[in-house]
Image (cartoon, rainbow, N blue to C red; front, side, top):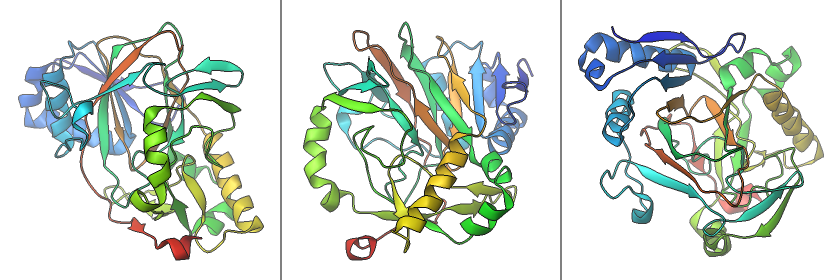
Length: 308
């Protein structure tokens, strides 16, 4: 193999870095098996030292499953329908003050699509245009987070389910962030989707713990952004327990990726939560992502009358 595999960051406890992977390497069955193995075992893979093109990003993504095409045509890349383009621009999205700093691109800790029953398995993300500061993508490993739980929380979390609903305001989620977030300007998307949340995105339920089938390791399965309450425990004690779990999660080791050109990040969305730090409003940040399809089969829609 003409590439190298190493540790993402010393002492982190998860993640790998692959240096020098080339498109031709993907023709090897041994290489494909190796990349799939480290994705499952390590949860997060950074690819660096490669000449990244849309075609290479898509080909790499396909090693890990079928790709989903985004339902909104405006987000799709004009030449590659498997890619979506995510633009952070103060003229196109909301503007927020995060801990006193005006920012775009800010997203609290979350799992993608936790607000629907069927959660995609992952994605491969690249940066097409980076900003002078901020815009870092953070990751926390929930296999590690479960292992680090104190014994009383391990006992308390067994069998629990969490109720989620789509949240479109970074500061509007009870458990989403410890930062102080003030909305300066709402986005057109928020103004359009907000009134239709209950009809178009009713509450869903996901287990607070599940077992990774390939390794039989337990995963703490909590997405702070969008979490409403523990099913059947929408009371003071239930919220206190969920707050303890979220506080534990965000106190676990974190990897923050400062983007550079010609890099790709692959993550397991069933295992990793991620976030985005704020970026300067006067600059534009452009990312492109594939979506690796899948369904861990544990989510379900919840009737609104039950969730209330």
